[in-house]
Amino acid sequence: MCGISAIAGHKPVAKLLLKSLQNLEYRGYDSCGMALFDDEEIKLRKNIGNVNEVNAIEHFEEMKGHLGIAHTRWATHGGVTPENSHPHFSSDNNFVIVHNGIFSNFQSIKTDLEAKGYRFRSQTDTEVFANLVQDEYKAEADVETAFCNALNKLEGSYAIAMICVYQPDTVFAVKKDSPLVLGINDGVNFVSSDMNAFISETRDTVLINDYEYVMMTNDSFQVKRLSDRQIQTKQIIHVQWDRETAQKGGFSHYMLKEIFDQPQTARQALHIPSQEIEVIARKFIEKKQSFCVGVGTTYYVAMIGTYLFSKYADLYVPSISADEFPTLIPVNADQHVLFFSQSGETYDTRMAIRAATQAGAATSAVVNVVGSSISQEVDDCIFQGSGPEICVVSTKAALSQIMILWLIALRVGVLRNRLSEAEAEAQRKKLFDFSRLIEKVINEESGFIRDLAKKTSHVRNWLFMGRGIYYPVALESALKMKEVTYLHAEGLPAGFLKHGTLAMVDENMYSLFFLPNRKDVELYHATQMAIQEVKARQGKVIAFCTQDDKEVQQVLDHYFVIPETDPEVTPLVEMVMAQLFSYYSALNLGLNIDKPRNLAKSVTVG
Ligand code: F6R
Image (cartoon, rainbow, N blue to C red):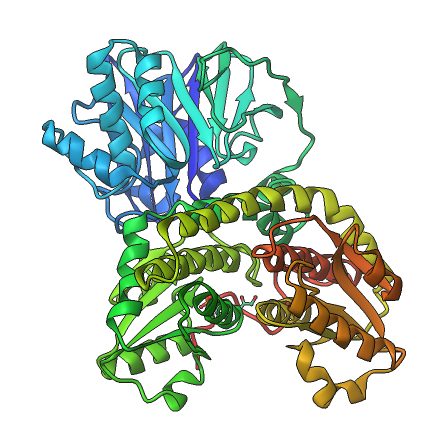
């Protein structure tokens, strides 16, 4: 998740572009840059650091030109270096690009372009697009055609803005699975990752859909469909947000914004290039034993991994909480440990890495922050590219890690001949469908979840229960509830209840059951048994179930309606809905949701 911005003006735009970068910085801040069309050529300045640090070196505001693009980066491909910072020139410096997202097939296109003599100055996937447009322009000297042809060759997720010397009054922009909006003003038009970039200049905005591209000058804009280049009619929407609301994307808290970011960040994770998945998947084959390790939420991510490896690869991969790992596991060189960390700085996880490394084990990680300690301490690292997670409690980073873990487990399944390529591909498709489904669920169910949180705002003690993969989902959801509401919420396996915890159940105890999809017949009935055990002791029960699940609805005090969906992804749908439930429960209590008491975003102490 990076921030992109482009401005076409009737007057110099450098200062406005710089301001837009400052407004977008929350989307990423490891490096930034600007390119402006100035006196027959494109001038580019970029460097590493946050916007103010880079501006102190590069003096962006001194740049000249009425048309420009800008970018603030959250690295996914290639380290944090000046060369990898955006914008990126084509080899001939006639096209310049900023990009948010991942081109998943960039490697093969890069190889083809290199064979044709194109030079690459960075390790980024973005530069491939710049050279591809140059190559297409050679074939047909029309910028719009070259832009569309290049896009048709690339897969992945993207929001792109481009300027070039051949059409010096026009910004070209396009989106697929990454956000992009237009800002319309008198004589100055904007295109950006979000309206926060230009909210101080204009509140008139146009929303762009996936596979639509924009051609924008200072006094006009056209939106076309990529498939047939047909012009799309667009409405200008006037937004009323203030600056702070705009920064949170119109949401009242970062937690809510980050929950709503998830359809996009999950898709971004699913576009991680297959070569990166392959490197880590092979370690599960090469080494005798593998472990998944994280702490707090990332431990629950790791636990979900245990269920995924078992299901898809017929392989037992124990998950261990990082703080226990050094004392519990006698690590050796025949082993491999896969770590998870949003911040990449967590002390407990770093100590577990140290223990694994000292024993000669292979180490790998899925990390959100590029350049972080953990990313440098492991042998191989996948950057999940979820963008800064500002709320102290983790939502979108965790879901993206689960997506990547899922891809790794599927690949290990193929390498162990437990899944065919076609079966793995079918599962991948389900994950993409899931990312679209949660978009619908969070939009349509939020109101209902908020009402239910209000109805249960008197509850002080919760049990969150599930079986199978729903068990780590229940644990993670209970942790979310504890963190933001400070209430007692205990996660446990539904089957464990009768072995002790049932003693706590009376008419004041509320239980939330992560009821499996009905098609998971055994798990479904086993969880229902636990619901009956609670009901028989006058306990209150809430559960996730579908609209048609009339039989179970009759015994419940309240229920969340989940859509009819594939059983594989039902646990994740419930996890996302439970995030919203925790959020609205905390909202009712008037708590500091983005910064819960006693907690820190990055726990760098032991
Ligand atoms: C919970 C949460 C924490 C972190 C844990 C690990 O919402 O955010 O439990 O998951 O502190 O942090 P990272 O992922 O940065 O290593």
